[in-house]
Length: 41
Image (tube, rainbow, N blue to C red; front, side, top):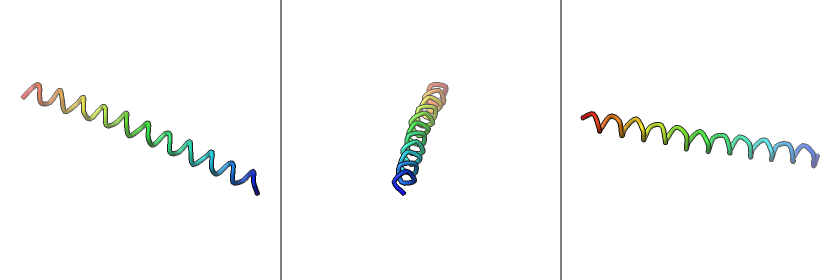
């Protein structure tokens, strides 16, 4: 029972970490793209 909860918690943390990383990465890429677009205009 405890092992299962520990596994779920670890799984949740990993999922959250990767989502957070993706959000930062993609928002950074979007900002870069917007900067390029506005520089061209």
